[in-house]
Amino acid sequence: MRIIKPCTYTVLSLALASVTQVTMAQDAHHSMPMSAQHEPHSSHDSSHQEMKTAIKSSQMEHPAEHAEHAEHAEHAEHAEHAEHAEHAEHAEHAENAEHANASSIASRAASAQHPVDHKREHGGQIYQATEIDSRWLNNADGRGHLKTEIESRIGTDENKLFIKLHADKAESQDADYATQVMYSRMISDFWDAQIGARYRVDEHQVTDKEQLDAAVGLHGLAPYFFETDAYLYLGADKQVSFSLETERDLLLTQKLILKPYLNLDVVLSDDSAYAQKTGLSSVWLGLETRYEINKKLMPFIDVAYSYEKGNQHTAWQAETGSEKQWWYGAGLRLKF
Image (cartoon, rainbow, N blue to C red):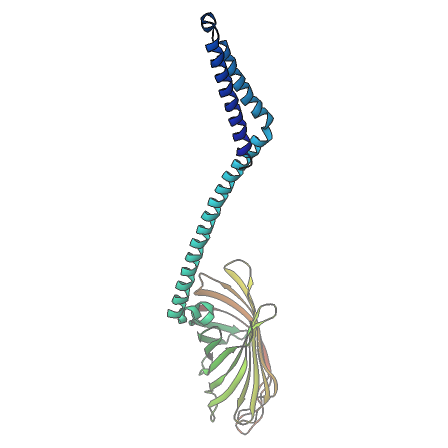
């Protein structure tokens, strides 16, 4: 309004002055003789020229006001565009929020309908694996020895059931068996605590061929990636023993692998009819080289050194001395 009013007053003043001048010119025309009336209309031309000059003068006298008016118009246009953009942005945010809310509701509904699947994705799935290891070894005297181990496990990452079978058969002799059933519970990222029982059969004994021992131990990965099983056994007639098995894979290639291993038994006490000498009872230290045809079929060769301390003298057996010997042979490992 501040810009429009001065311009309006100026235009009205100029129009009033023009009308006055036209009226005065008409009066003068009527009072002039006829000869003067036929003269050129120079006065009308001059009046129009004066009006144009006045309007131009008015525009030159108020350039700032005209510029301010244009600036306000431009600002109004920008404000209108900004308002439209803001409305569009709010609409887009509202649409995104609606989609996010719908997705969240659908996700919660799916989780409520399938709680077991959600648990399985975080380590609750049940898996099973079985490994069969069989090898034939010969010593320096040419005596053969067949050793077979079967290990099967089933369960989750936290809770598992282990079943282990060991069979040793010397050439031309009956086999000795040991079956072990263990419940395994994860106690850290690398270790499981295990508890269970071991059932043993020794065909060389005349009495007490079958033995049942309680077992407790650890299963896991020792520093430097040594897979380790350590067990303490408690049986009848004060039979207390400790066993340790540890091994590690060393990759020469992706398929050719070296595996050093150590198996040892320690007898802490034994008052049975076929008692073994206390202390370090037996040690097997070997190096296995296997070729993985695939992850299920793996033949290997084996070289090992063994130590046996021998048996105590009892009413059922004579005392035996220790034995040390080298073994070499080949075997096959299956996994499924």
